[in-house]
Amino acid sequence: MARRVLHVGPSETRGGMGASIRRMCSDPPDGWSADAIPTHADGGIWTILNAWRIGRRRLSRLIRDDPPDLIHIHTATRFSWVRKQACIHITQKVGIPTIVHLHSGDFDQFTESWLGWPRRSIRKELKRTSVYPVVLTQQWKEWIESLGIDGAYVMSNPYRNDILHTPPEKRDRFRLLMVGRGNNSKGHRIAIDAVNQLNKFGIKAHLDILGPSHKEIPTTGNGISVHGWVERRRLEEISAKAGLLLVPSTHEGMPLVVLDALASGLPCLVSTTSAEFIGKGGRVVDSLESSAWADAIQSIIEADDEWKRMCQEAPLAVQGLDSESNRIQWGELYDSIMQSDSRLGN
Image (cartoon, one colour):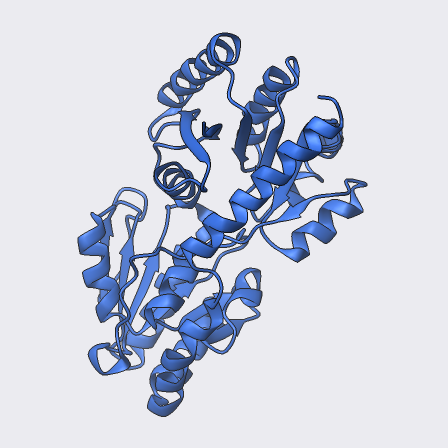
């Protein structure tokens, strides 16, 4: 009989964390079945609060009536952590082994805010006996160890298993792409200003922005198209034409959009927050000034041979990060946690 893992997090919302949960539920490890309880919803504050109220109630009821073998909590920072802290309390009342999966790329900043409460809270919750922290990279493992939390597991995000590779001959290197939510941290204004500067100097670059609405980004410029959220097929059509993905973020965890782009042969121009993921399949800009991004974009799109080399190198940067390998790794971790937890007598 298969063991059951319950995912707790934004399983029905847009964005990388929601996509990760849906993938893990649709294709769980061998010997496991998976389900999810959503704790967040796209929309205004009342929609979010209602989703959290319903999710917390469902979690409490399920643990009481039909407890799973393992709970996998997915969390970002700020109010996402506040909600997930409450979920940890619920699961630990009955001692169910619980993975706490840190997805965000700004936990270090978060722990220094709110008068230090996040640091104290994270240390307390992640050091509980039946709580097993998971981070995205070795860098975040070292950071969490600096808080005095040992034993964290590193599990990288995978790229989508149905990614189609597009050769450089079918791409337009003057066509730029951004994909993601309209959060200020994603750096849309940096990219927009950079493209406007290029066009001002006669370099006819075009930027497609997928995710934010016109309301979220009201002022753009010539050569910039804001598409909002689009269906997967439309996303793939636009991505297949693009010549460069822009990621001028102030912080990132392990962005799925970068992994998917590299796997498809699309080079990436990223801020330092994503530097460790791109290998030779892109370039890093160590500034968040739009002028620096304009210069970097220009240097790439005007060097055809270098751009083609990055297209060829991009898939090599994500070798071993395919979805099937990731599924197997999660299965090994789940089984290891169950064995460890039983040895502890929990």
